[in-house]
Length: 298
Ligand code: GRG
Image (cartoon, rainbow, N blue to C red; front, side, top):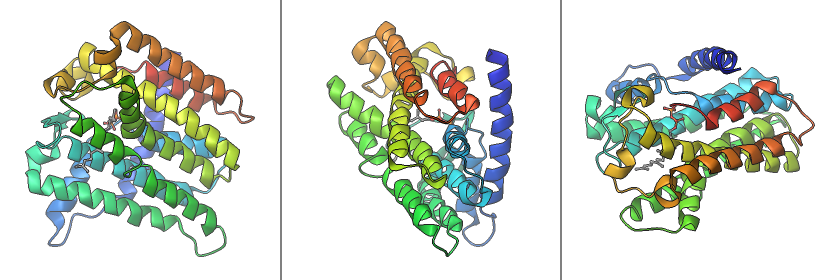
């Protein structure tokens, strides 16, 4: 099972890499330095989990139009990458390595890293807008576009990141920590799976079920991230370990302890899988991927 899922993930990742490459901007013109900084981080080789979850959800609900889903897959990876560039800046986590390479501000300087993050965020919407076709099907595309705008925003990822930054040096409640994790991390996973479902024509109820599954998977994913920050190595992670402690970060492990955190990763994952199994659709790879994410090593 372990080798076979790893091989499948690798194949799916290669497929997503080629889609992403086709949507990246050409590095030319007077603004080419910002384009280079954007492409540098996009090409640094992340796991591509979000576009993968989006595409697999789309396929599960019977979606078939590559020209519809692919611009959104590229867009969500651009938004995720912008958030990482900004998160690594000296004013935030101040990290020198990400995805196994020097971070954008180390290579291009802080000003260009800020602009590259801004550039990716805007370009994500420019890219997703390529999915509009100028006919009545655009009503569904507009719904997906709205989710792409809101989940990463102030009531989603930026909201979670704000609470995380503002309350960094304070002791916080489990309730606030869950707010942070649900928004900082789950929001983009929810965004990905909801867009896959919406674009494939899923019902409101099914979209809502996917949102719930994604929230639990996002929590399991983030708690695992908190665990790996303590138990892993820089070689395995592609970024420094112990970063949370260095930044006085409230993490699931600092609040609930390592053993409970590990148990909760399993509990959130199992609950998400139970919900997934109630759906009348099947995607065995997506199910295996959801299970794999909670036990990942990077
Ligand atoms: C607007 C200044 C400004 C900053 C925004 C919102 C934000 C910065 C950052 C939040 C993003 C963040 C670091 C969330 C944590 C989620 C997480 C575990 C990210 C790592 O995702 P992976 O493991 O990364 O999928 P790869 O590299 O594989 O894509």
